Amino acid sequence: MKKITFNNRGQEFHIALKERVANYFKENNISPNANASMVFKTIILFTSFVSCYVLLVFGRLDWYWNIGLSVLMGLTIAGIGFNIMHDAAHGSYSKNKTLNNILSYSLDLIGGSSYFWKTKHNVVHHTYTNISEIDDDVNSGKILRFTSQQPLMKIHRWQHIYGWFLYSLLAISWIFIADFRKAITGKVMTYPIPRPKTSTLVALWLFKVFYFSYAIVLPIYITGSVWGVLGCYLIINLVLGFTLSVIFQMAHMYDGVAFPEPDPETHKIENEWAKHQFETTANFAPKNKILNWYTGGLNYQVEHHLFPHICHVHYPKIAPILKQTCKEYGVPYYEFTTFWGAIKSHVKHLKRMGNPEKYKNEPVDYSSNASLVNTSAS
Image (cartoon, rainbow, N blue to C red):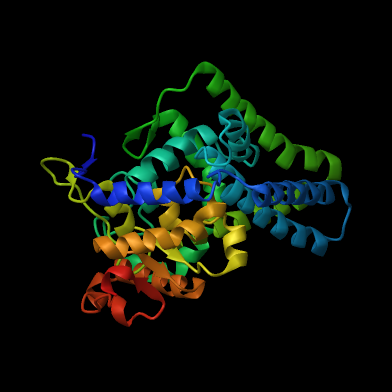
């Protein structure tokens, strides 16, 4: 596939964004990396993970305690991914590259692969956001239809119902299928993954062996309960998959979101890259401090896509800078004021994609949608 490019001539808007955000950190003498609160959060999440594991494996607790701990562990693993792994993989946790690399391996410790993630997420998703033919995040096989470019099947008219159950399978699919598929094909969708060094491949498979050993083999050996361990493992990963899916989907799968297509002749996207990010991304519940803490600032998805090298703890402060710049340049800035508003819009998007004939006469009206703010319309 020929490389997709963007119309980046001029880029006055993107240049203004970068200058203003850089000035914020310079004028306030603030590092764009993790601060003390981020370090404290890291300690809390890792401590919670270890505590849950020790209690599940060595606690000899009643079944209802094990179920509760499994749910908590699933949420904790998601929190580690949202916060520690995500920032470290982007190089935003610390200015020390070695520390970032070490912390990014937290994904390998919980069953994934940081090597494949850096191509799938950092390169493909962040560069080609919502471009159907290349962004793996908007492609979930034939059973879910996220974009109008994807084939329509009769079953899709109910995807707004059954989709939520499939979301819970994300982690299981990721751990047991997706990473191995990438290793075999050497691609994320149509995008080639850089050939890893031998040491990287060895580390990848050793981490996989270590993960399955501590997550399944050792607990069965210690407890002697095969079905009990497998049951807890299933609960952990269903909770993990559902949590990851819901948070990821809200930012790029809302009613009226753009799925730009490159010109078939030039393979170029009409917009410059920065504007493309704004038209394919939305924030949600920015004033919800608990959600912001837990999701690693992923509810500030706009800020994250424009400045992934900045630690998420700074997003609430730089968000007003982006909003003001968007107003000046007439660029849309989408933001759901509540999490529930984003959920409802996601459901509407699934309905629209699953039954386009039924919803073709229901245009998205941002001005009358009280849960969605579009600065270019204000």
